[in-house]
Amino acid sequence: MPRRASPRCEPVSRPGSSAIGPSNAYGANRSYTAGGIMRRVSTPATNAELFPDTARIGPDGHLAVGGCDLVALAAQHGTPLYVYDEASIRARAGQYREALARVYPGRVTVCYAAKAYCAPWILRVVADEGLGLDVVSGGELHAARVVGFP
Image 1 (cartoon, helix red, strand yellow):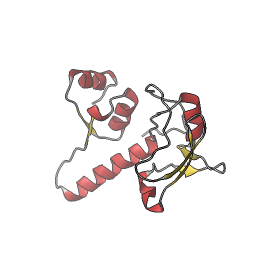
Image 2 (cartoon, rainbow, N blue to C red; image 1 turned 45 degrees about the vertical axis):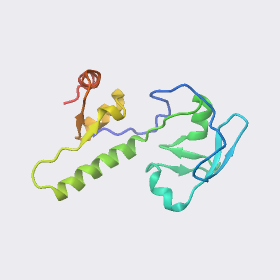
Image 3 (cartoon, one colour; image 1 turned 90 degrees about the vertical axis):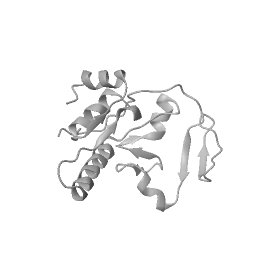
Image 4 (cartoon, one colour; image 1 turned 45 degrees about the horizontal axis):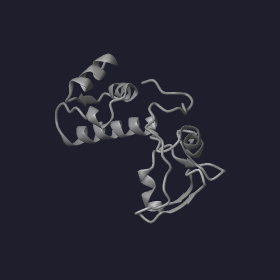
């Protein structure tokens, strides 16, 4: 399975930008600059497993995912910004496959729901990792065929 040697810190898609507001229903301690980019988040260590596998706090205190500084990405591309960690996606796919293979006898196919996010790059990752693809619409089927999904 091909792996990237270095992080690719560029968006694959970008919704309309808007500033992050200072309110937080979950009570996390958040610090914002005038531009609306969150500079600091304090979260209990018990939530650490919710972060991507490659998440790290850099010496500047910024959260980085896949080697990409999230503050820099937000400054460059605006917010909200969706950041996907390919290494974590691949790891979760493998964990699902292995867990089901341990529990169910015979052939098991883990399927990714295309309706969750149907971008060509993620469909290629899903195919590379040996997952099936659950499609419902003609558009999802077309996207799968365009990237050569098996």
